[in-house]
Length: 141
Length: 470
Image (cartoon, rainbow over all chains, first blue to last red; front, top):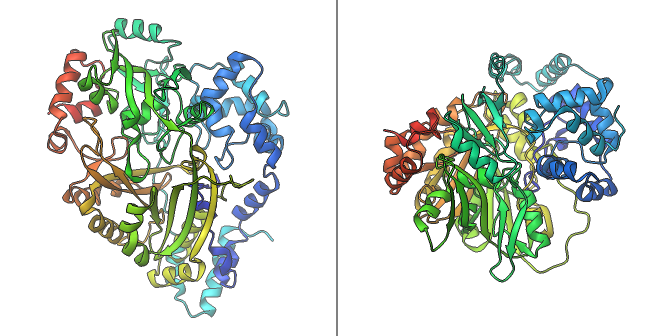
């Protein structure tokens, strides 16, 4: 997983790109990791998506309650490493060929910084799928 | 152009040869595997049991079940009728085995949200499972704000308070100092309504409870009117920042810094209260700093001189960020990069010497890259607060989640202890009951109260017994 470090703006500190004249780093910059980065920036969220993520809630009040307590802290925050609510391109990219079933499975086992059961130990598969549908705007099947 | 890591290393080696750099040293370093052995780290749970692990993945257990009560009365009935070991869990952000249970884990995340508020008194009552970020956001909608927020805000209120989680600010106490009341469901299933002024002993024991007194279902917090902050982030040479850190900590509302080992450069962060226009569309920072530091280690870790030279060419001194927003949006942030951590709180007068020794110890190893974090915290009255009646400088050292972390305690703890430090309850340490009795003047009182509330030791897993029982 690509590391992140959005600690109060510290992540803005970037120094190595200046050293492209150093051949060693020039070589490193061509590795697969760099390719992953450029893919990630291809799906950077727009200001509209960020605003949507901060304010959107599921219509179903029970689902909204789970969303607020378990999903919101990361999926509504840019830079958390989690795909933002409403950021369809990122959800589709992460779902890959396994689609929603794969996402439900990785929610239950944990993925990246998300612990197993996605901070909702009382959720069942149906609820996880409904939350994914809401966050991915139904784009993942 | 796409290159494999091996091709990159060969190309890099060729470049270094041209530059007259010893290729053998580089090749030996670049082929080194920095990761730790994690085989068998997450054993499959026994059939019929649940599985739990902490955020960093180093703590895991197989409880008979993870119980998530819908409300306080269900929790009380469960506590009264369960004879097994009971451990409460918040968001699993502790690195120590506070939650581990081969009995039951109680997940309080359904006990969440706004319960009531008193605009006159500026107090708000939240379910104990409310995550900090959500609580801060709800408070903002009520025109109120937390005085301070830690740098991670996905913890539940209960988890943050139980472990004495803190932010930075020489005149700002850790977050549990906001607690003016709570409801405790005892191990016997009794509900105790604790209020400041009425039962101060239980209040001060329960503010930082390690989840040992029962399960807290709600907290009443004294907040303050909403406010805005200006956040500044800047890069400064370490020597220069060390020379003026005490003055910065005294004069700025919130001040902290990170030091990236083997670079000579620090990144400082300050927050100052301000009534100014909110910065429009300030996007959260990029996410490459740690990746850069890791790359610097991977490629130049074999030569301290070269690593420092490369860093000095790369770092630019001066402002990195300068933005204004409401307090809760600027004081904390997500930490998607997982790590393991040890943090000690050192009496302020010993802090500067401890910082120097920490840097020196860390830089005696070439394989480190994660920054040191240094913060300031004002004292408070909670019996098990590491900041009890003092003022501390907190020094945190980290290791990437995939790399060894045992040295964080083994090599650094004796030095931190020499300086009179107390460990963060949720971060790695190797202390036991005898140490804690010496470090905490009210520990004996806490133990007596714990025994009174939990005569059968239902809340005590081996780690709690190591802390509380001689």
